[in-house]
Length: 210
Image 1: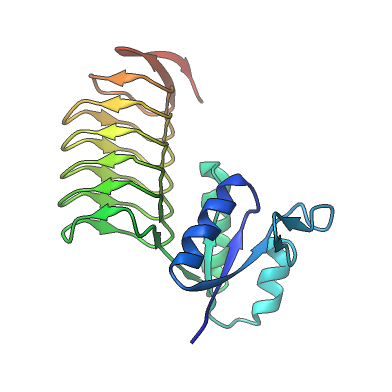
Image 2 (image 1 turned 90 degrees about the vertical axis):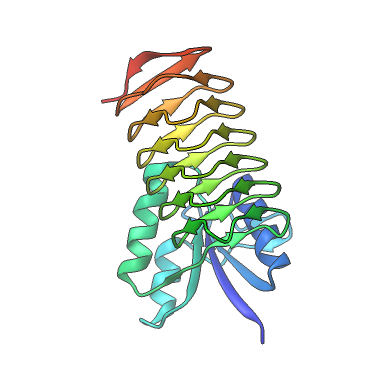
């Protein structure tokens, strides 16, 4: 039986998510708040804005995933969908390696080549992007974004809504606060507080995000 999946967010990020979903046997339908000025993404039509998806559901449970890279907007859309009885789907690319002992909450997407090792815990609505490594015992808060080729050593914790830029590396047992940004290519060897931007090798705080 065909599985239907609503994808909220029609961007480059959404293209990869649609590709993963189709490999997993879903038929996808895109929704984007730029509709009707934006009516398609590649060969996929866009069926309406997020509010159109909610209106068409008639209170019935439907499968959905949010394909928006911005952590705050993704969190907002996921909350809205949950309020309207949608089922948050977690999509894991077939090439990803996931330990049987890892825990992944609903609404996450794990991209090609990613690795999530034993007893790692991934919060709701997270993005584990292409070839990222989340080692054993790591804990990621809700709505974090782990960009391509990020490497988290064992026991790292990352607070909710944080963003780890492409190619960044985090030393074992280091803690990164919530709503913080780690710049691309950074090496994090000491704890990083909440609400800051850090960059460099080793990474230092460069701005406050409040």
